[in-house]
Image (cartoon, rainbow, N blue to C red; front, top):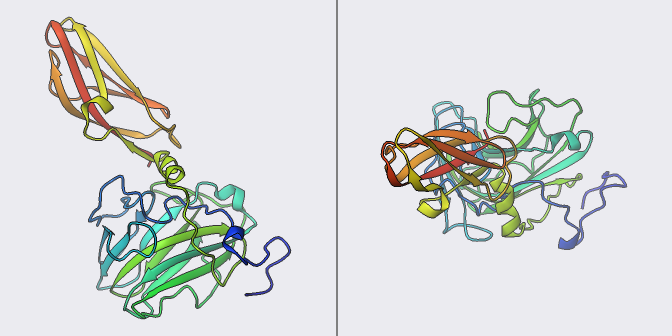
Length: 300
């Protein structure tokens, strides 16, 4: 175990002493947007992990055969004429409360390409993690835990023009073409250069956290926005739905027409709040009428 930690950050002796994970979906178990492949920056992949490639091509999918923990992990394939790009990153919402503290980021990775995968913590001014060799994969073809520490500066500013524009993020980057599997990410308060054990967050809590940034009604008519009743042609009728979890900010809502009678066969006007969404449609017939609309809501 390492020294020079300070009185606030004792050594971790048992699993029970591991500080709380600050990340959402550190086990890559939640994939609300589907299993991929995800190839475009700055799209999300597994909740709430963003693809971050700047050069070449990167494909990220959900993998259920090579995971180290739980039921799934990330599989990423990277190729570039100019190597050097983020594979995934996650912005840290509570960054203002972490200013002036030491943080430790540990993440498990498996690749056969030496010196290709690097873990890091950075903020908007380009300041990155403390220099360390334990954050670079050896290319052993086995699972290795990569760990970095960083003393968070004060006065952080949000990242510009990216989803979830918070003042700091954790990341896994690549310096060479490679295939890499990723699992078991932890971000904790404290300086632990030897790494911290992966302790999974209870699934229900992780899902509730993910819902604060992305939710959808799914494909079921009854889960979406729906109106049923007597209608008069030319009049406007409203349907509303509360989100299961209030979102982190007012989301962008996308409506998709599902079915209708005496209403146009297209989604109407959206009304959006942090706690729910609604839709207006104008009837184009008189009599018994209904419409149903599926929705997705995402904080960007």
